[in-house]
Length: 42
Image (tube, rainbow, N blue to C red):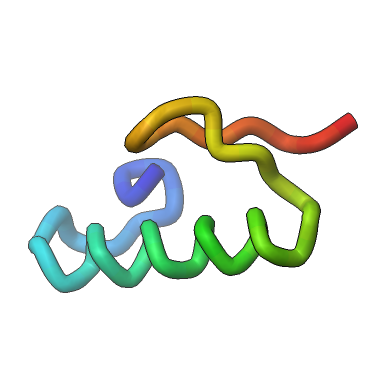
């Protein structure tokens, strides 16, 4: 996901992206399918 969005692949960028994705899960926009996989709800 970080590669697609453009930020450099550094640990802080990866964790920041993961936090944003988890927020989208709490907003019921995404579903977390495993430890590092997310899909859009239909």
